[in-house]
Image (cartoon, rainbow, N blue to C red; front, side, top):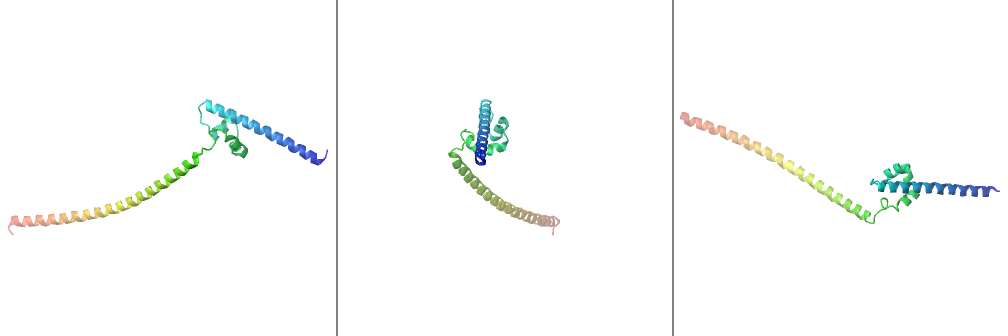
Length: 144
């Protein structure tokens, strides 16, 4: 047997081994998903990895992601992009409203400070007038 045949045989054996391991992984995923659904538990990548006894990185492998896409919990909705865009637009609107509210609050704070100062001035004027009035009333009683 030549080296080329030996490498070819090794490659075939490796491919069979990988296919076998993938089949085992898929079977574990299937069993875990069935269990989680029947138990009424959420089917998430974390819960799936724990229940199937797989490392979370395994679920990130391309072939596993493609396999998971057949399950409703992991298949993207057609509406997902539209919902995401709608939410992003809503966030943008809310951020703008928040910015306007902050600007309005700053203006109101400034106006409030101005009105407090004006109130203090009026109170001072009132006290001075009251003092003069009391002096004038006192002078009238004495008869000046």
